[in-house]
Image (tube, one colour):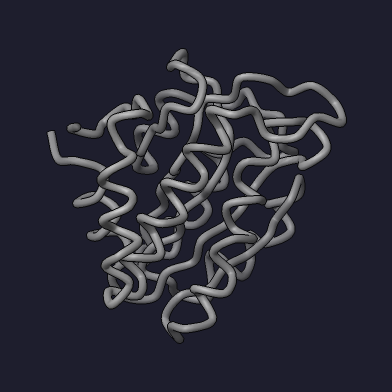
Amino acid sequence: MPDLRAQLNTALKGRVCLVGIGNVELGDDGFGVRLAETLAPVGQTSPRISVVIADTSPELWVNRLSHDLFDHVIFLDAVHFSGAPGSVVWLNASEIWARFPQVSTHKLSLSLLAGMVESNHHSRAWLLGVQPLSLKPGAALSEPVQTTLVLLRDLLASLIVPQSRNALDVWQARMPAVEMENLKP
């Protein structure tokens, strides 16, 4: 099974859109938005990377995501997949459909969003998800989810802007502290 770094590196080729989804007022549900916010400056350094803060209404972005001919659209979101809090899941569109068919806290489910993105037969849709610990109203990100956010930010930044090797070295040093699905330590 390939490690997360290799999978992300493949999905960051060509024109890429990172889509932050979630409600920042509900603790760890804000993970996707917060990660996208931290990556926005990195996205500005590369003309092939777009970062969208979709908040709780990703359906408002479907037209752009399915018609702008991105090679890859990566949804960033907190999702329940029975992992340890802060653990990561990386799924393609068919895996999203299998795990999250229609149940969603969004107006459109992640599986439907992924299907709409891939309907142009050019784009591939992905989910980079984190297992939340708490969705308590008014709470900040929990410690395990915040730790994962920092690690993923550093990893994604190093892959988007390859000269930021120091960020990758830091990520690799911290990685064993975070349990991640589909990731070899």
